[in-house]
Length: 61
Image (cartoon, rainbow, N blue to C red; front, side):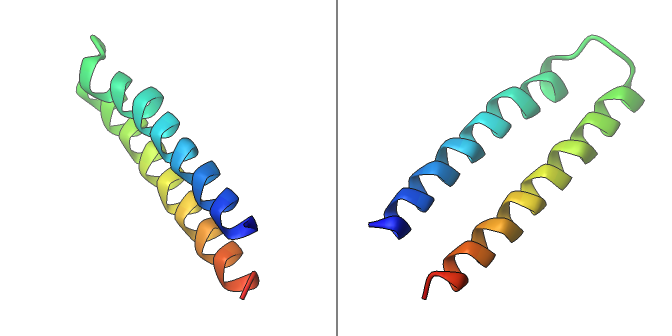
């Protein structure tokens, strides 16, 4: 049950980061450098989420 809850929470987190993180990258009016910095931050957030997700799933075994 806890594993399912963890998966659902992380799916929601991925969707939120994707929506609110990649939206400004694709739709921003600013310079390309600003888009690239935002994209780098979003990628780092995705990497951190994936790391935490894997750690939680392995810890629960």
